Structure formats: C-alpha cells, structure tokens
Amino acid sequence: MRYTWGMQRTIAILMVDGFTDSSLAIATDVLRTACSIAKRAGRAMPFRIVIASADGKPVRSAAGLQVGVQHRFSRAVNADVVLVPGLWAESAADIDATLARRDVQQLGRLAAQAYSKGAIIGAACSGTFVLAQAGLLDGRDCTTTWWLAPHFRALRPAAVLSSDRALVVDGRVLTAGAVFAQADLVLHLVARYAGPGVARQCTKLLLLDRHRSQGAYMAVQQLVANDASVRAAEAWIRAHVAQPFRITELSRAVGVGARTLARRITAAVGISPLRLVQRLRVEAAVHLLETTALSFEQITERVGYSDGNALRRLLHREGLPNPSALRTPTQARSKTSAARAKRSSVPRGHRRMAAT
Image (cartoon, one colour):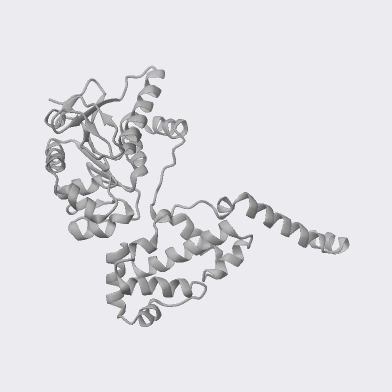
C-alpha cells in the first residue's frame, strides 16, 4: 500500500555510506520549502519525506557526518517517488568500486522494484550510475555528471546519454547532471506535484538557478585527456579558433579520417566534432568577455565568426547569459571609459552632426 495521504506524495531518499552531503541537503531543503509555502497558503503539505538505508541504521556522508534514517529500503519500496543520492567519487575507478558494493547494488534493485510498482525514480550526479547498473536507463534518454560521461557510456552503452543536459525526464525516470543539478530535479517534482507557482517561489526563496545545460561548465580538457587524437584535435582547434575552417581540415591536421575522428570525439566528449569546435569558440569568447574590454563585434571576429547573432545563439544554447552579463564591473567600466574617450576626441560640431 502506498504512503499517500490525500494529495500528499511520499518521497523516499535511499541512503548509503559515502553519499554526497549536498545531495541530501538540497533535496530536503527544496521539498521542505515547498511544504512550508503550501502550508502558509492554507493548502495540504504536498510531500512527506522518508529517509531509508539498507538496514535501517544511520549512514555516514562523504564528509563523515552521521545521518539517522526512518526505515529500511524494503519499507520505502511503495513510495510515490524514490530518489538515489549522488555518491562521492573522484575518478572512474571510484565509481567502479562503489558499484561493486553490496549495499549499492541493493539500492539499485530496490529502485528497480519501486519503478515496477509505478514509482517515479530520480538520481543526480554519480547516482545515475546506480540506476544504469539496475537496468533502468537502457534505451532511455538520460544524463549524468559531465566529467564521468565517457565512463558512463563505456559501462552502459544501451543508455541514450545526453551529457550536456542538466535534467532529463524520460517517462517516470529522472536523471540530473553534476551535484547541484539535484536542485533542478527536485524543482521538477515540486512543479509537477505542488504546481509551477510553488516551484518558482522555491527558486526565489532559496536563490536557485535552474540549468538547461551543463555545457557551460564542461572542462573540455578533462574529457579529452585519454585520447591522443582528440587531444591533438582540441589543440589544433584552439590554435585556429579565430579562423573559419571545415571539419575535414581538422581531421587532416590530426592525421585521422573524418569518421574516425568523429567517433573518437563522440566517445571522449559526447558531442560531434562540430559541437566541439563551437564549444571551444564559445569558451574563447567567454574568456575574452570576462577579461578584456573588446567589443562584442571584435570578440566575434576573434573566435572565428562574422555574424554576432550566430555567437549569441551559441551562448544561449550553452545556457550562458547575455554577453553584457558576462562582463565584470572592471571590463564594463573600461569599455564605457573607452567609449567616452573616443567620443570626447571628436570635435563638438562633428559630434552634433553624428547625432543627427
């Protein structure tokens, strides 16, 4: 029988030792805030939070904090929503060691069992590996923390991974990207069950930003480290970022066929060669916006585009703010000062003519 009191939904958070402290804190803070907002509005509280561990005993976070729980995993199988926390990992080897643990495997089996009973299943960051190991992501659109995406693909090629997305909802399975994308996942649940108005209030009260993409935060250098051809391609793109070029020129410069290069770049970074070029051009543009007083038109030319609108569209696609918002106060003042100096150098009469 489900833990459902009226319109209230039970959300079970399944805990094991080594969970990331923020994965629990973010989930509970957002859900409790939604309940508080609903209560003040005279409405029934939309969520009941249940924290469970494999044996019903306290668990320790990655930082060593002890957290008490209310139930064993088996008591949480009938929850409306089951959340799997992120688990601390600093390498792919850490992920493999975590997935081999008995309690983690038990967590995955419980999540699969809850899904079979009709629950919504969600996981963020490395917790998505647990869902993948349980077979819940095979044939599904999903995401994970961007820097572990190559290892995810190697472990679970049957999953349809979109590692540049911050949140992916595929039916009753929700996956989110790096640790703080947990907020996007839980806000989605709030909007679904308590209404978009409550979700917006949570966002404002907790000063949360919702992310469409992880692309703006991906460190390409970290992802390409394991493939010499992709490292060479990255270096060549950076050296020629101010010049327009074709992907065939890139593959010739690297010394591999275009198809081979595309396959290797996709395996390493999870995107096509064209998207890699675009991402590196955006990275260069953001660096210039943040560190120089160059005009947007000048920056557009320096990163290989003749049309500023094309660059603006790419910035938007990567989830970045408007170019002016990327300027630091110092760069903004320098740009304004330069404009004033240029204007003051024009004779007053000519200035009047230019204004008409």
